[in-house]
Image (tube, rainbow, N blue to C red):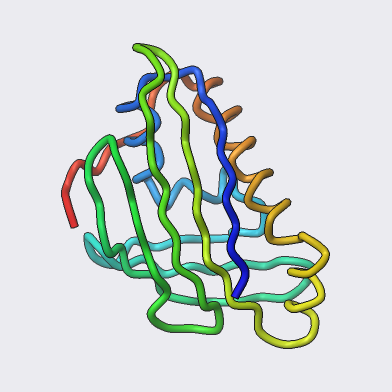
Length: 149
């Protein structure tokens, strides 16, 4: 199991950053390799990804959700096995630190080699940087989910 920790500071209020992060169907706009996400229930999402020509589908269950603080998840079906949490930290009225912690279980030789070479870590860091550009360019969220899980 690989453990990844990455963070990014964004120039938007914590509520804006959190609200945008809960818009899972918007993830393909800033997450490289994510083709589609369907939110099937308030806590279940279905992911379709394609990385280096390899397509994968999996379901992820939101296990904890506290508005403006954290979103945690674990995969529950499919060919990807991971669990993670994203936390949101208010730095001041217009700046937020977003921290990602991800436990990823590579499957097969290609995944294991890619993981050892730091591919998953670089992917996570790049996704956070693209989220930063996305939300700062917009200045506001595309929607919000303020429920708790």
